[in-house]
Image (cartoon, rainbow, N blue to C red; front, side):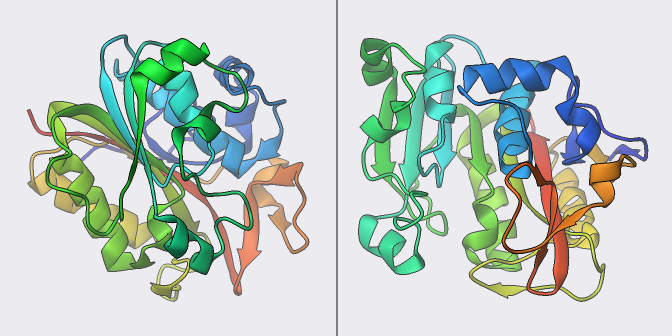
Length: 271
């Protein structure tokens, strides 16, 4: 597995960490326009741009390609993908479970596909034709979800109950792909420690060693990844946001005593 130790770039993304420099690249502004947002130094916005850039640079973002997204909430990605002619299966938790976990209160849950084009990103008729919605528990992906060209999730796998559940989810999403398909996932990276972490609960934090071990495991299964865990060297890369969080300078934050940020994974399934 190739490992890069230089500051990451959004132009040709690999499995990498959210860093300030990526917000200053042309690709970032391009995808912000696509999702109808003003660019800001916020890791959640970076996750959307990173996933879209990863799909574009791996050749997955093409008319006729089929993609499945997990824990989509009300994110703009299904609409953007449909606007490019991709067929999309968007999935999320059932409403009762989402209410119990608090996702509906924060508008981070979708119960029907209409909410996924609320920004009018995609022509309504094209969106209706290309996008389907289905209730799916990420810990129990149905066996009939198969042969997709790509799959994605945006900061969802850390909410599955444990680090082990998150790792298994990543492995299981690869089973839903055709040979050579691409999986793109973002999750939490513990920047404070490579020993102590939150391993169980509503939100878990993956350490660098957990990411490396997952990549090595996937490599033994024949899948392809390139890893870059460089955390950036610009001013905002060293700024730690604390509650109440700053919507304009939010790359790294303090969460239950740990500094965390977003990390993205790009996995090419074995051919």
